[in-house]
Image 1 (cartoon, rainbow, N blue to C red):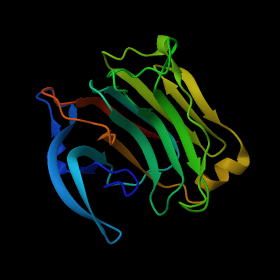
Image 2: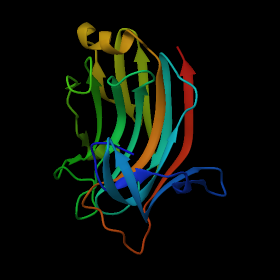
Image 3: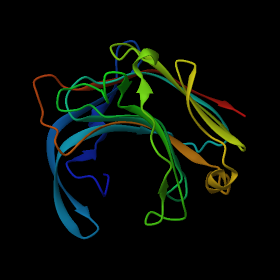
Length: 212
């Protein structure tokens, strides 16, 4: 479970496959008591998370994803360091609001890339998420989310359009000093989430890694 975000935990029961072979991540009301650093907490919702067993280094990461529909959802496709945190590369992090829309304003979606770096959890730096123009995504369909990670730059593309990049050598040092990361796909819910008759479903049609 996420130690800093209450309300949910990860459960294998929320990770399944559709008949066509695509990955299906869901969220369901399934209360559970967890021990969070010595404090017992009630987590009401079970959520799906899939992590690569193998650690990956420089290369290209691609996933075709259809975002879940519903209010207060938090789907993500990201990389996290194998041995410490940070660094973290958020290829896609969505946030649907109380109206069920992934909408920042009339022109941009709350579907965002980001990058975290630093020497510890307490001292980590959020490089800053960047909202994406609506014209780049079809939220009722599959979209391709791609990360190109090289020693001298990080580039994130949505449907083959560059939406985020990092080239600052000092920032990249944090990810290059131990360049091994796990890829993760998950459907989380926010603390404001309330289950409805329609279970949220995040569908991943394709995932691939191309070594540098």
